[in-house]
Amino acid sequence: MKHKLMIATLSCALCLPAFGQSKEEEKTFIKENMEFAVNQYHLMLQTPPQGKEGKGVMPHSMRKDGTVSKGSIYLWTSGFFPGSLWYLSDYTGNREMKDAALEYTQKMEPVKTFTDNHDIGFMMYCSYGNAKRFAPKAEYDDILIESAKSLCTRFSPVTGVIKSWNSWRSWNDETRFEYPVIIDNMMNLELLFAASRISGDESYKNVAVSHALKTSKYHIRKDGSFYHIAMYDPKTGDFIKGETSQGYSDNSAWSRGQGWAIYGFTVVYRETGDKRFLATAEKAADYYINHPNLPADKVAWWDFNAHQEGFTPGIRSNARKLTANYRDASAAALVASALFELSGYVKGKKSELYLETAKKILHSLGGEKYRAKLGENANFIIMHCTGAIPQNSEIDVPLTYADYYFIEALHRYNKLLNNEPLF
Ligand code: GLY
Image (cartoon, rainbow, N blue to C red; front, side):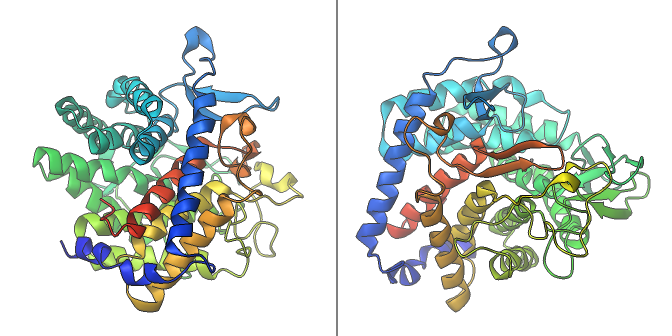
């Protein structure tokens, strides 16, 4: 495939020193961060399960008292911890990480039949997708296919998109929408492409392409920002309107949503070679990179438009009460990971810009402002993430997915420095 060839030609841009650092210094930076992550996760692995019958097994975030909070395998973030362990094990060869990656991945198997919302792609592809990649076993194929089947139960040929949540009640009033699709859903499509590759059955891929096409039409605004939620009419498939759940206001640009768009459309371009998806990924990336409110360290505020004139949170949203502003390091981490890939699909100055931005983000996150000290931050790696301000939840805390995308970005950068294909 053409796009694979492009990835292989990145070496020129990578010959350029990053921030005055040589290629060897960059490799040392990656190694130090990976080794730190192993040590931090060694401590995380000593922490016991939580909750009723010990069902809280997957590190999720940090409680107010500074201890780790763990979720069940059915929480949307459950796949990230096993996924992080796979990347760490692959990079370092550390036996404890490998054994734990396997153990935590196997805990996820019952999720393969989960159909309550769209998150199964996050859950099963970050865990079993990485297991298949780094330590393949035949049984993983059936698990991934079954997971893809579960996700497809939420697809309607009338709307042409996968329904994210069963309904959504607007922050502004009592309106309840029956077919909400969130931009995060782009991240679930990688599972469907994998299922088609494994099974030879194109129907999973067709669902993914249909979802991505409709999302690229209705979810994006003219300036390259994205609605968090697009509402569709389940009877006609018509787009009704865009709103937000986790952003500042319905017309604002929630930074993690922007990240999901950059990453998701980059994946769909990788899988299809269809330039329309590349164009959407670029628009999404350019919005993030060129935004006047993006701080110099390239770690975005949780919403690009928080507290700005012309942006008003809904009457029930906790964002109305907010006076301080917060960064979202999880958004930056996932944008960095996506940009390492996207830089391989574009040429010249643009490729350099994407690459330099990804490197800048990694160096910011790996620096003392965002990277925790050993044994602190509830044994997570990255600090200063924002989960859901409108819900008054997870504000300025670690989040397992920030760690995952930080580690994935380091893993990708290392491959690029070694002139190895990313996939
Ligand atoms: N997918 C949920 C979130 O980004 O918070």
